[in-house]
Image (tube, rainbow, N blue to C red; front, side, top):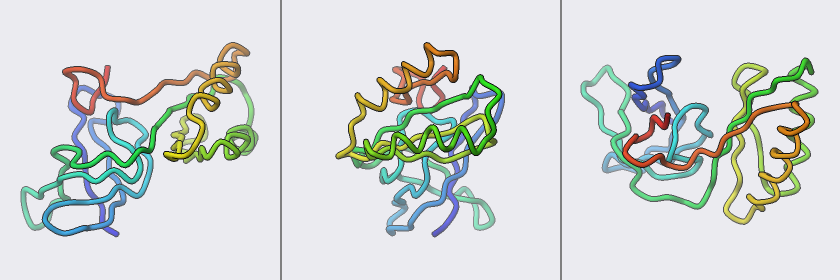
Length: 149
């Protein structure tokens, strides 16, 4: 496993994001964690990434192959603990949706290709209407690269 990087110049909050990746050779890497900030890139996608120098992480240039995973992001709005929030999101595991915790409030959800993306969105929509959280889908935004809005 190696670390690779993705520049997000329009994201003034973070500016970029690093990922664990499997080096497949020929500047191709398979992502091994779920994005917290990027759009149009998902867990297990294969990306083309090149390094600007020997001491720099390879930077993602483009997605070489999409592998069918989908990403959702959640920001909790309630006063629940991080453990309670993780427990709530674990209810989505039955739909082959698994979460990663960024900071106790921000979570990324990976829905596997054989998972029920629609049902996961239904649950998130319900919790959003209850005021528990806010969520967004993370597919590519036209003309915005990996930055989204």
